[in-house]
Length: 249
Image (cartoon, rainbow, N blue to C red; front, top):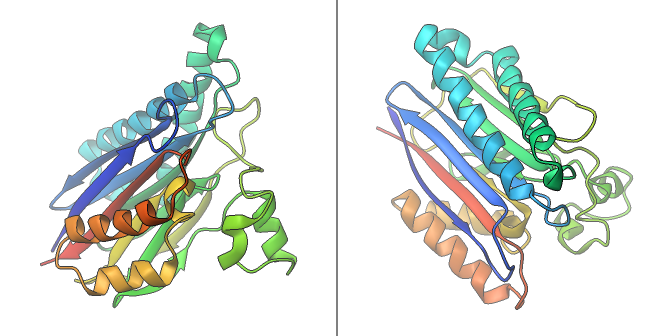
């Protein structure tokens, strides 16, 4: 069993790209990370890159020492907390980016156990038998409106507070990620899609299921999903980033 991936990270209609992704994929497991620097804060591309790179670096270091520990929830949480401190250190070195911050979504698995952690509105989708099995809940005012029954989860995309986040990485105070653990071994056909809001805003969950079912490779999946996105975007659409990961023989 192994994980095969395809990814994209594009500027969209913005002047520059503040999204970033990184990953480490091997025959015995993977660490997949997607970050979205907050566009309204100068230098957030530094925050997103620093965060993604540090999470993967931490994972590799622990995995080399003890592969079993590398997928334990407390260690995955420590990768992200360490990334937070790296971002804040960068901000102290460079006052010009003192307001920069980022979201982060991270999947770490050794096939026997899978940990999914996130801060912000970059999402993790987990599919079994080509059907959505799990998705993260955004840390946003729009998600709160969903929890209060004021708007449906599907309509969160057009909610006036969709981009107002309640939790980010790199801010003056640190709130740990939400962390979910899937202790059942992964199976062939399982899949993950990790993506920023600039991606999921234009692609619906049932379309993800459809494209997973009709595609043989992660490259096909991501190509079909991007085609849907490009049909719907406006001229000044956000940066958009996604990793598609499939579990195969």
